[in-house]
Image (cartoon, rainbow, N blue to C red; front, side, top):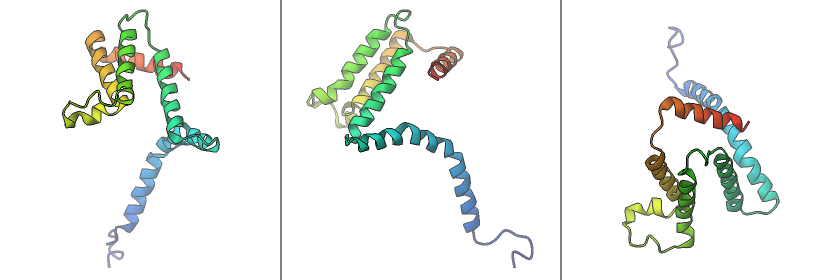
Length: 150
């Protein structure tokens, strides 16, 4: 009856398929970037019989080194201090397991992960020492950092 009156079908299955295809097309670039940055090193690492954790750590460390290479340590004198303290705090959960044992339990997500703890310390110290930048300056610096690596 609906088709004779040019109405949409009563079954929504056809619409779900179209939404799924649109979603897949929209996420295509994300999936390709994931395949190139995460999947390929993991495949090569597994072919060499390396643990996945070692490969992922290497990828994160290499990305961090690339980011640190774009920082001007001469013009902003506090940046070296910020990096040193953030790396130091980031190693605490691995090297001193009982360091945070007397803190409240709701802080455990931040204190049991070196990446989270190091990132929080770096962001807080950066805001304290370097302050907030105007949006235009931050966008220019981010674009220069992103496009200089290509």
